[in-house]
Image (cartoon, rainbow, N blue to C red; front, top):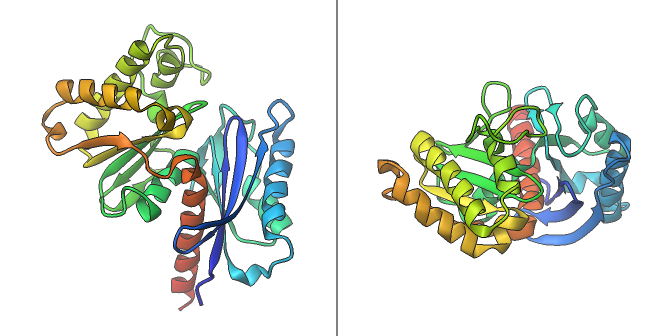
Length: 279
């Protein structure tokens, strides 16, 4: 029988947010704490576990579909391994196993922007949209691709790194070691105009390559700055090709809860798959 609740956890560069979510997307309880940057991977994992325990307490584990855990990292989804983690030092650490063993729940990890896309698909603005792109503008720039009604993770689960799309080969260094990436150029923009132009350039590439029906822009910066989103959307649609014709570029609707709700959506989906497989 399907469980009534799931736990969604969103790890960001500044905070960790966890929420108890029901199948209708209502957050019934939540917990937040600062991300302990500079203290190593296990401090981050302890903070994740602490947030989760504060919510679930002594509740029966059978009530939970599981935990969906979003990380600001490249995640090999099939192997459930972290390949690269720029903001939080988690690469090479078996986060899934460590969290699962402490909580006594099934845990699935994924890239945080992927989970924001899943959240918007199940509970937000993209419930009826099969082809959309999610952009998260916050401490960094993340991306999630929903194509043909499915979250597109690529051959090894690493797709969607829109923030590391090269816009200027001679541009400033990125933390990943390359140069001129969208994320770096956007974060180093000193004025709204500069950031708008960088975002618009990235949007043009997204439109021309993926031909989405919808582009959602969220994250702390994207969610709080409607002028940025509207300006970039107007500029991008002037320069994009025919795919712009029926496209909407809007702010995401789930706000700061997108990652938590996306984590819950992933946990529910994984539980459904396990139940289908058993049957």
